[in-house]
Image (tube, rainbow, N blue to C red; front, side, top):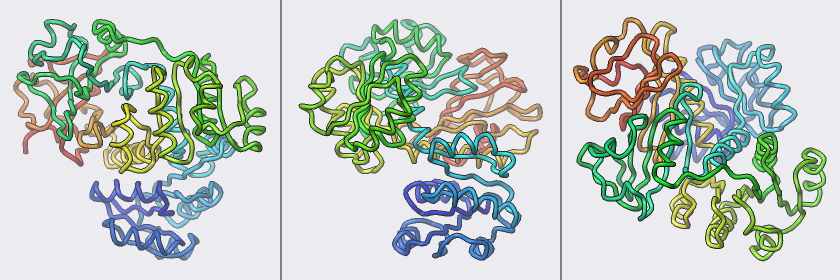
Length: 452
C-alpha cells in the first residue's frame, strides 16, 4: 500500500516505523532537515524535505496514494493537508487532532471534512490509563469485540496460586471461561504449552469475557476495586483528558500542575476537580497533598524521568496503583524495574490504532479480515481479532482438525455476544469474531492462521 505521512515528529516517526515494518511503501514529508536525516538513516521509507503544500503532496504521489496521514504539531495544518490530499485523489485520510475544542468539532464534522479517521495520542493515552484504573489488579486491559472480550495482563507475585502450577492443570483450579494465552519471563516471550510452569515475576496475559476475568482475579484473591480517588501530576493534554474521563466516572480527582496560567485554565475547564498549583516533582509536596491517601497516582508530565521517579516513589510509600507516561522506548525497562508494570506510551497506542485501520483497508467486505490488532508484551506478540467469512476454509472445521501454524493460538471465539474459550472439538462459524495470538507479523486474514 502507498502511504504518505506528513510530519516526522515523534508520532509521525513511530507511525512510519510501524507501517514500514508491515511492508508498506511510505513517503515522509517534514520541514526539519534533522528529522528527515533521522528517517533516512533509520527507516525504510522515502523522505521529502519541506513544508506540506499542494506541490509537495503531488511530488509525494498523492494522486496514487492509498492513505495520507497528517501528523504535524498543528491541528489546522493537519486538517488542511488531508483536505488537499482528498482533492488530489488520496483514497483515505487520517488527521492528528490534539486540542480538545478542535477534537470535538472535527469528530462532529469528520464526514464533511473528508476524514477517514482522526488520531489523538493524548486522548487515547488518557483512555488507556482510565481503563487501567478501573481494573487496578491488572497492568493492562485491552477490549476486543466491542468489549465482549478482554485481554488482561498482570504480574505474578510469589504468593499467587499460579506459581509452580503447570498450564495443563490450569482448569482444574480455575473455570473454563478464561485462557492463558501469552507469558513474558525476563526477555523471553512465549505462547505457553501444557507443560509450561508459572513462576513469580512472570507477566501473564489472560483472555475471556469481562465477567470471567473478574471471577478469575477474585479466585486468585488479587481482585481490587477500581480506584476512587486519583492524583494526577501534569496538566498537559493527557492530564486534562484523563481528569475529565475520571470525573465522568464518578472518581475524585486531584490534579497538580506547576504552571499558574495552566492551573487557571484547568480550573475553568474542570470545576469538579481539585486543582493545585505546585511543583509536584517534589515528593515532600506530594506528601503534603495527601499522596498516601490516594488509590492511584498518574504521572503525565513532559519529562519521562520525572514520571518514572514519582511513580516509583508512590509505589514505595504504599500507593496501590501508579501509572507513568513514558515516551522514550529505552526508558521502558527502567520504569518496569521500579515496579511500574505497564508504562503508557501514547505514540505506540496511536500507531497500533493506525495499523489496525490500515489492515482493515486491505480486507474486502466479504473476506475474513482483521477487525482489530493489539501488540502485547513489548510488541513481541500480536493479538488479532478476525471476522470469519462464509467462504473461509477455517469455517465449519473442528479446531483440532485445522492445520494451524505452530506460532498461532486461537484464544477465543465471540458468537452471538458471548465469549467462548474454545476446545479442540469447537468450530469457527461464519460471522464469528476470532481472537488469535501469534508471534508472526503481517497477518491480515483469518486464513493466515493456517500452515501454508
